[in-house]
Image 1 (cartoon, rainbow, N blue to C red):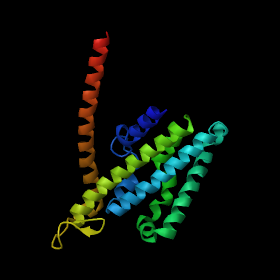
Image 2: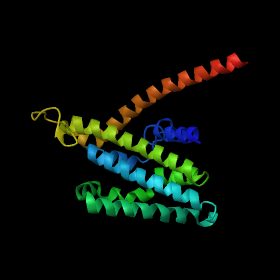
Image 3: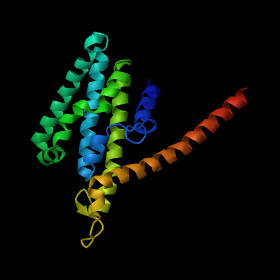
Image 4: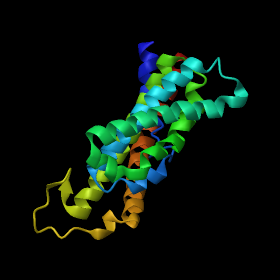
Length: 214
């Protein structure tokens, strides 16, 4: 059970990273990653919704008729999004205002609905939690990395603290939408290049092991 949980978790975190491997959730990825606080907040909010909705959908999957499964899933997801929105408004109003419309839009985030339909609706609750946690933290890490690059180059700060000095002029391009596309593209290329080498080594080891057995 522990090995299955770890494998499912790492699959979402690395092997099928929703941003760099599956290219899902691009709207919030490009829109909110101008500051680390925004990327981290958006990622953690999405992770909470993913874990909770995956768990509940896995529990009710055998009781919901197939004809109404999509509306049922949306109701479950919207419930947890509402919880997140109310918590942010109560305890982190500045972050809530900064993320704005993208918090309620988590309801239609393709990552969440894709995991509900492709995984949680077909697997047990524990595996569904692992999948939601892996996918959510994979999404969070991706947003945080992109946000850090854009905030550092664009404003010379990280989490609002000056890093490159008070005289750093900043590169406006990285704060604007074109900078988001540029950062995402370059980071995606680097991530997949590294993963390609890892996958090649893994395949070579597996082939060698199968050859020795044969």
